[in-house]
Length: 187
Length: 202
Image (cartoon, helix red, strand yellow):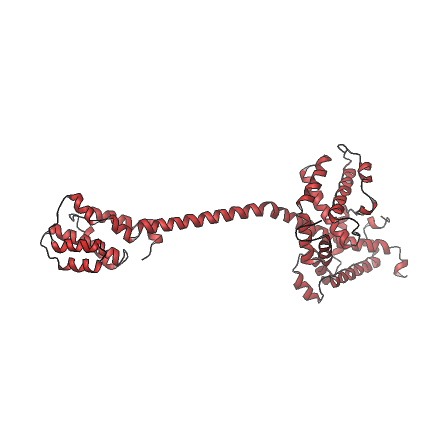
């Protein structure tokens, strides 16, 4: 029998086409439903992500800048200003080499300051304590808080509870070990 | 309809091309906020819910896609007018099925609002029939299933096109017709597999 004469010809054709279309329609609906989620949620989420990301970056940058400014080696050295200590205790260190070294330190001539400190020979324990503290500050500014020079000098002061600058050394040690400082500042 | 950067002609051509282009065109139509709101308002005005409006809009896009590919859309009206007509016909059909009373406008009255050239010639498939049709897909060859996937864009278009040795557009349509003919031939040889729905001259 010719295909065109077959009584099932039209039903078979319709069923075959419908089977294809039915399958395509199912997938199309799935696709359109997935667009709905994208359309409603994605832009909002994207905006939130971007705002959140931008805010995080800004906060991080601000934190880094703040930590670098307020907790850098130089900033800590400046906080433990030797002149302030001298004026606070009311004591007068009468040693020309030492006072020249202090002057050079504040003129930021650390090489000369260190050289003058080495030249200054004193039998006065108190003056020697001041010299050690100034030497520590110079090491902090020149070699940094992670250097062996600085670390050994700090440990030396901390090992002597009678040191004039013992409590300051303890405070400095705590400042240097601040969590965020250790995370951010690597010198 | 201007869905984003595409004109009606662009959308129709892309849908006929199948694959990724079809998917993008359907997304553009579906994301036409003005049209979507128009359909939603129509449903709301006739007593439907938001979820029904959503379902109707998706169904309408599916039917629009089918009518474009089968050549039933003659471009006598714009795509958005045509899709809105589909939505109204579909909604009325749903209401009839559910024997729902209309809120303010009689069914016959709404049907007359749509001119003949806008008649979307919709064909509805029940869930039962859909299940029967799904079984027929199992009769297809692997190649034909891949072609079907290309139309649905469930597979990477270029990969399948390369695998089948076909090009985009017209060649794909020919392949699809060939597959339908093969399925038809198989059904003619095994008429008991044809769902009853298609024996009644519906």
